Image 1 (cartoon, rainbow, N blue to C red):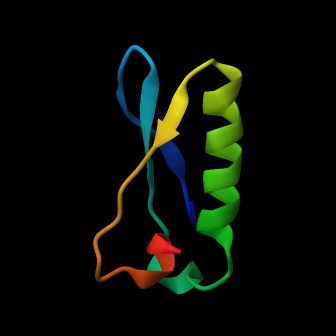
Image 2: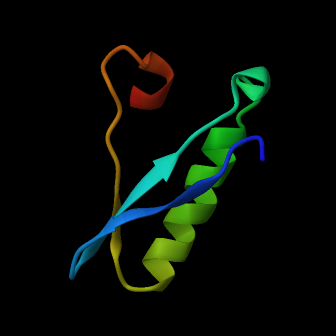
Length: 62
């Protein structure tokens, strides 16, 4: 898998998402596509998607 996404921590009203991308596949917008799909699936379940990123990962903060 180049860039999987999944739910990490579920609450009553939210689902914390996690995405990881194999370094060989970075900068191809694969993580962005995964986040869009995971967000849509989370919203379809009536939950609010959440996630965080370290400040050092500038691409994830935009």
